[in-house]
Length: 405
Image 1 (cartoon, rainbow, N blue to C red):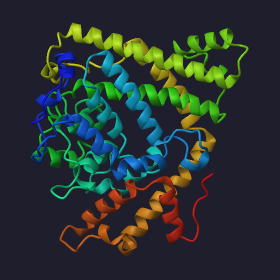
Image 2: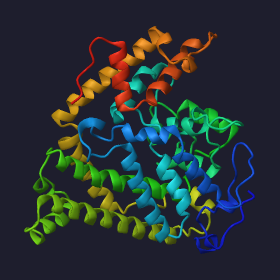
Image 3: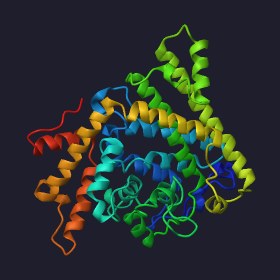
Image 4: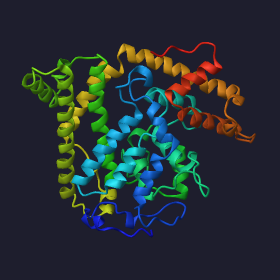
């Protein structure tokens, strides 16, 4: 790397990822004298079409349901803010943490996890669909903004953090780990690692681990906010939750004279603060316990060094169970999911039967493997759609489109 480290790198912890020590990029480039490699990663991510499309992709509620509900873009910005806060307190590389936070949801389909589930089923015979792998594909292949290479040519640290922010993809026996145990490591990840080894059997950099924690902080707390705003449950319904319920009950009593909306915002603020403080405390404890001195110590540690305490993890599990029952599986949300699934299924089927309906630059030339290539291209095209574009396309191609509220 040609980047000349500024004084701020000397303020970072010894186990922070430093831009001046980056493993580089797949395609060699002359680095900037004014921006660190991770600053350039961040800037490239922000300027992508995939990043702009997040504005019109579902978080929980479909984009047009209300101006105040989160979408993928507002969620991403919130994650980036939390990730930078935690990284700064731990003397990590804020720029890398921000880059990872900004890119972590690029591979999501329209209509949230429902769209992902449907695409995974449609592509099950050729490896399925997984949004983390799709994020990697977007930043390494599908974004075509540069004359000399496909993708964004991000640093090794940004790519390995993007792929492994939820942990290693392979276990100690080189078998698919946890969420990949059933279907295996996504095909595109394996293919890419042949040309640029992301060491998927190891933990990610600590900045990526912190970005993953920030994601949990953001979506759990803000789903509470959106669920209350949508009247899917009441403030008082949350009182029985461990740890979080005590805080909410206290707010209800202490601020009984203010509006429920302001109580909700105060609760949101308190819960975020609690979870951030827990991450900081637990991560510091892990650093000391496992004698973390270098970035390699982070990669080779037996656990994720950046994480919540077991006590807060248990509270989060109870919160997620509550949200699953009262929000994600609520009748109004389930109705939307059925409609969304129908739209994605119909689009995939008609593009497969009549590929001429795809834009010209998405058509596949005849080849021996044209069917599998065509299916994957269709999956990539649909995955990149926004909610409203998917609805518009369905209206263009079908006489009747499921009604989305």
